[in-house]
Image (tube, rainbow over all chains, first blue to last red; front, top):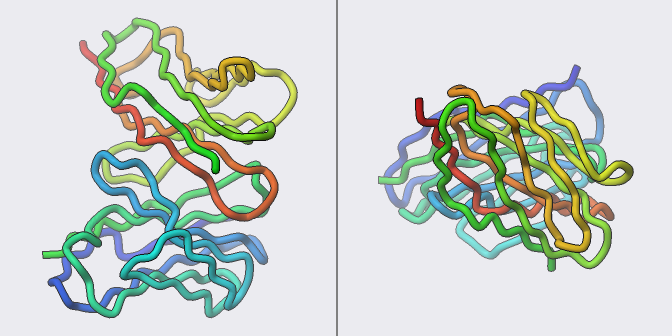
Length: 111
Length: 114
């Protein structure tokens, strides 16, 4: 069966420090991969999606970047975190638009 | 561009009472519609989805939702809520035509009174 792993579960980072969040999917091939951010009272915002290795689409301009070095690995990064980067980050995958499966999320607090 | 509106930020319901969470969407074609539930600090769990066929969709945990094209709505219902239903509920719409992800509403926080 397919599973999705996200880590770390929680992270506290100082302003200006770098960020790397990792997401991996097991049990499937060539999934579409997504990074969402959930800020308090603002629902879920799609940040990036990828339909294949090295293919990244950005939905909003921001201080973050994404990479897909392997078929089932999706990484969210920042060179210098801002206070406004705090939030709950969710990775998701699907094979078709009729489904979407989410990881357990990473709670990022920038201090 | 597609959008989703969940007009109720918070809803309080007594345990055993019925529940309806509202969702309105904006999309030019037939949408793919989803309801997810999120417990505190957790990821999202799919409750149900609609993309064709019968407009009344049954999901997990006793939830159902009805797609009404004329009202651009996809409201979530449950006849009798349990304390364990307290959570955040998200309605989402997908374009159905590509890999560009789901558009979510801002969520409704459900509180269950004993």
